[in-house]
Image 1 (cartoon, rainbow, N blue to C red):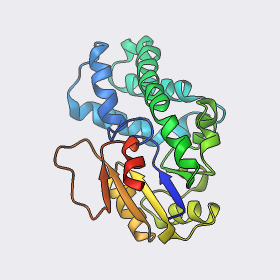
Image 2: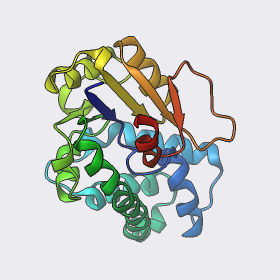
Image 3: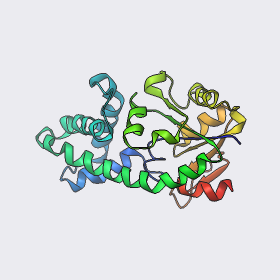
Image 4: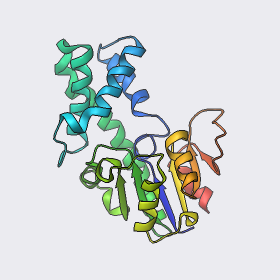
Amino acid sequence: MKAVLFDYGGTLDADGSTWLERFYPIYKENGVDLPRDRFDRAFYDSDDALPARHALAGLDLEETLRLQVGDVLAALAPQRAPLAGAIAGRFAADSRGQFRRLRPVLERLTARYRLGVVSNFYGNLDGILRAEGLRDLFSVVADSGVLGVVKPEPGIFLHASRALDAAPAECMMVGDSVKRDMRGAVAAGMKTALVSIDPEPPAAGQDWTVRSVVELEALLS
């Protein structure tokens, strides 16, 4: 194996928890306690439409999150709009704690493999990784918002493997989504590792299951 590809949200910034699952309790802690179905709809609407509603180029992680949270609050609780900064700041702080935890692991992996990121994102992930001090670890960042190809379409995975000068069979995709990461990478001909904190992780045909990117070192050794 020559290359290891990582999903971003839920994989590099958390141990198998989606943005939706991480955000909901933070809203509740800040007094925005709404039925889960309403929150889910507002979250996905904000997430899907963010690049169309806002100019994201050059924004860092917290600035991007503040816009995403702002749109959710505008839909659900416009009177609580001033909370956007606190909610986004808490989420960003949690992500940065994970970055600090994973960076030594990623640094050691770069000595043995070519690393890349494959993510359904807003088009500004390269800049966010640079601002967070992580971009130097990855030889390619395949951002769906830039490429116009989204996971699980094989094309976004194949773009990354070509950039790393590795055949698909020489690549492992590490991600927390069965539908987007595991099935997409398998369709592209790659090995897969599912990041899951579930006591009974889904059996989705993945080659390996880990609870965190931290466990990859032992797995790959």
